[in-house]
Length: 366
Image (tube, rainbow, N blue to C red; front, side, top):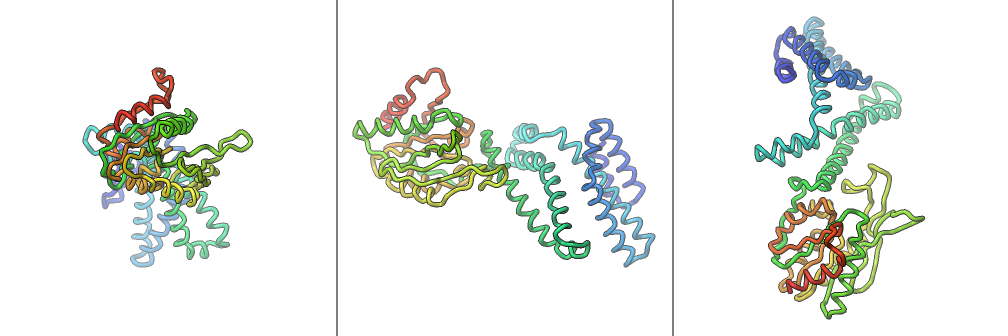
């Protein structure tokens, strides 16, 4: 019924559009009455009435009041149909459901895009209402606010871009690869040992112990570790430390929710990325790369990814130890296009001495 109402809403006859609005409301009441309350929010109703009034005034000025009222009413009813349908769909369909259906049709990327957009709609609508209120207050009057609408559009577009970035990062953290494939896989066939685990599972200490053991055995290493910055007993960020020189620089610091960079809850320091590039540039023949760790930023082609890609293409490279969150393992393997990969799960009961397991796995590839 909702699909039929949406189709009928674009008919040219007012009676048909009115029937579509009634059908949409009835369907919403039958499926989920909560969606009606979502549609009747003050900001949404005000916006719909305003849009209809503007359309009506423009047509009245050009073609007379009868034609203007008809067009305004049609616009309002169409908005009722679309808003009601969107509210019902948003409350009953999520990104995972759309993705499963899209995978069956071999349209995973499209399904993920639609699902993320659907889940982001409620957030964007609340933000639009808040931004509009702030815009009206700062403008000092109705006509002044209308003249500054381009500024409002710029703010909303910027916020939409940030929301899209966070949504793509959230998808990456759940292991979806459709939106996270790096621009090109590294041209390398060396052995990659992936150290997987949740945050706080000990990836960094394990990588540090493995690097020390490799050096003790006379194997050259290059790369970096990212130990946590702890203040007052809380993890507030990360430093990057070169495993060869010992040089370190702050890489990331946690900030308030929604104000981070690249879809994360952190702001990043370019000095940390620069030190990471220098550390990865130390890759030569026979060297084992130590990379702690790769995240959603890298899996979208940013952060450490360009330096890692160049390092993995080094002729005669001995191998690579790469740490990653457990949920990102599929995305990482897809991005690396690795032909020789070993996964060590730090949360597996079968792993007693993870550092020793890493060393044996990477040495077997030399």
